[in-house]
Length: 335
Image (cartoon, rainbow, N blue to C red):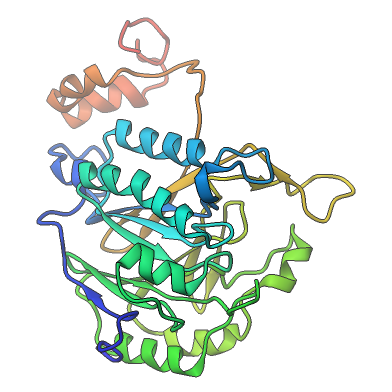
């Protein structure tokens, strides 16, 4: 791999013997698609401060992330990797990175998941490199390659030291082109902080966008890149770039109100979410998971799973698809 001799650009060997976690164990296929070949948790913009201080004096970032990770762990979803797309620390403070690792790594170990960090504009390369990767401090771009059972994930550093907008150097783009010259068995995901997408509902963010996007498009168009994961915007959005789907995960710290009247920017302590990414042979699905307590108004217990699996295709169709079935008319106790 080009640039492999640099500490900031290393290939991470596969750590998992199986893919897909819970989904790989599914026996009965109820629809047209088999189990996903890969499952990734996409988390963004944690914005930790030293000593657990509240962000803007109001947002408990550690509580929010702990709640999100607890929700993921309790769900039974077993992702191969936890991908954090930048702005891990708000001010690049050493203690913030230590506290982040102390929260994330035990959860990742229990899930059997690889942790993939991505640089954000609020992060600082020296602290990021030394405190998250246990290497000597460096000012070099923090680009890394991870291999997850045939799926390649490239953590690409779009930050510009001393600034909040994003960009990529010619050297980084050459390195990326060299890496993508050899396709991965299951394709590639690129994880960045600054998303290469328009922000029509957040005009002010255009000043802090990823610059030179045409140069990146030239490198990745027609390659095995199946998706781009990003953060930075503090709200969930989706687009296509160079023919490749882009998915932006909302922050776990705070989000932006896109319809606040009379405000260019309006940060709110609500709407936090993370994404679950499922990769299939022909498609990639990004599911937004809101963080926090909810009130169930209707549902079906997981206790019914074995009964559903025991049914024939025709029995399932008549029970769950037929509008006049006892189930859909609320005449059974199976909900």
